[in-house]
Image (tube, rainbow, N blue to C red; front, top):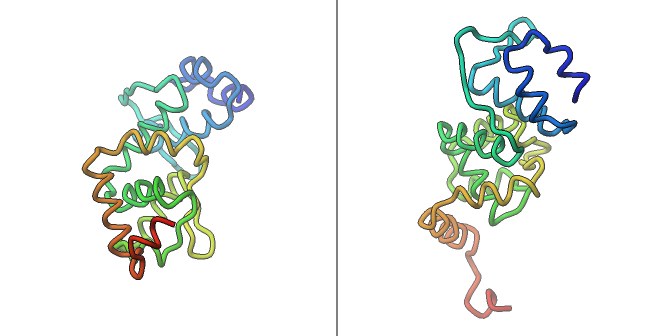
Length: 169
């Protein structure tokens, strides 16, 4: 992590990044993505440029940083829904399952997650990156009524053919 930060020495957030990073490449990768998502950093001809006049709070811990990144996704509701469903369906969800759950434009919204590096897509399957870290953060962000909606929707669209006896076993 320190090697990467040295290259950012002129970057206004350098000291904060160095303090928070503490050798964690995972934190570093997520903070760079967060700064891009909040438009503090802008991709310009394959280089990251600091956008003048932008100021944000950088979460100190990886969990806070991940929570902030997930919150930024709320603008893309169906991308957020894919993450929400992962609480119940696990770290790998295929496109057919997401389509059955009535996610609009599955490929487009899965790509949003992939572009943000929160997930990756392989052969029509969305894989949530760092799922062990993401799961409790995603779960804590869900309101009780949203959890109820997700569970009912899963049962309604994926639970066809199941009866009480099948579910109990």
